[in-house]
Image (cartoon, rainbow over all chains, first blue to last red; front, top):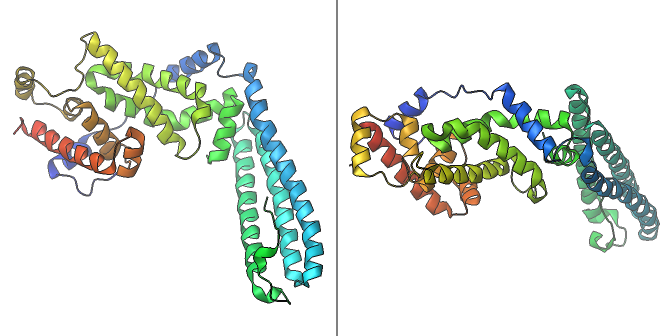
Length: 165
Length: 174
């Protein structure tokens, strides 16, 4: 809390105050019942998740295909520009981590409905780790591509049509 | 829970996922509602919490992920509290939180207000800023964003609110 500049009278009053009130159990059940009655919770509303998950899955698939395409086209460009092999390996790592990221996301979606908190937590951790790895590799690739010495003819890296996914 | 997982959870609308979400956010939500409603209205805090979740699940499409989910949820709760307070005020059950009149003030002065009651006697704008800043730990930038006011207004409202609180807790307005 932001109590550093509090008048002393209030500081004492805030400290005395106790926040021990816990939500009653019946409130959770009543809220869930109310949500179900309105069709806002439960399997009857799978129309919405389907709408939400399909674009995510599609985006993952498109991302994978883009990554694959970029790798292929950039490999050709690399050859034409005589780019150092590190660019290719960096691209491969981006593609690999990108695919892992997409798989982790699919797993996470699949486990959303799991009643076991531990299972969902693990799926979340895998997904977060995959996200981090993918971002790290993407940054590494940018660094490699942005390094002028990787281009024998001295062209700027911005001329490469690289798309991230 | 990270934002992507959270949005997927909400979109999936599965009961198991909702229970986890409910358990994570409701304790703070209930305290928040109690604080905004004040002692006279706190018996409605549970209803506010329920209505907040119903609205949140109904309007989850408007959650764009720019802010934290908890902040967004508090925004929904704040609106529900506001409506509840107005409904109660129109039914003459509780005060709207406008400036206390002198007659009422004298009575309260004699009985010495406790903190909750003192907070509830603040004008609505000042009360919301004080609760969000001093009791919920939000920063002025977040409060300004939530309430649709400037950061400067948030700071001055807090200053005024604290001054009035101190006066009330000391025994009367100066």
